[in-house]
Image (cartoon, rainbow, N blue to C red):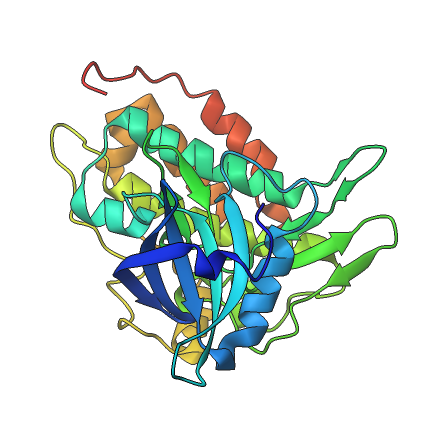
Length: 313
């Protein structure tokens, strides 16, 4: 990890590759290394601060969590505008959302995307202890395909921790992000939409992540080739709500109607891998939080799926 307040003088920004809720994303060069730079506007300082705190949590390093390099504040020359930078590894495939929009998936890569995403979430959700350090349990609170990146080996890694919450299991303290931002409405769990989530019980936050994971898994399944064909990419609930639905619209759909995205019969009937995927998805998005699988079980179930690696991969 780099020293703070130095990296902005060492990184050369090349091209803007995205814009999101918190600001812009750029590709840059840090010496010989290609990096991603997430630039937050000053009004989103709380989100930048929170994400930096999460990334700097002890023992957070994991192959399925986006690698963090440094955070910095940058004042533009001849300007009083202060930018807050978050510098991470760069992954040229972009987000899972981007990848699924461009490419169909073999069964092998469908399971790989699902398993590695679940593995990253399982790592976040568990605590780790050594004699000198502790990694607390972390719930993400904004799991969606845009917040998952695809690496060069086609494994996935989880990013964007501006809303994450930590749990100190020794003191039983829940450290909730102080900012007023909320997660993405389309991916909100029934208990978040219905305001029935128990914020004093950390398991509630993990269960909510699992519901969101179920929707991401559905996005992945939809793009798997079945008998040489697959459907075009669509967001979950695309057939029922607009591009930016309101909480009221999502609550009516998810809580009152208990509606979920369609799992087509031909997917289930096509192969063991697709059938297993569909079964896991349904256990993730149960209306009952306590009935959902935990992230470690999701990862284990995907690891148990026997699927052959295609010869071209």
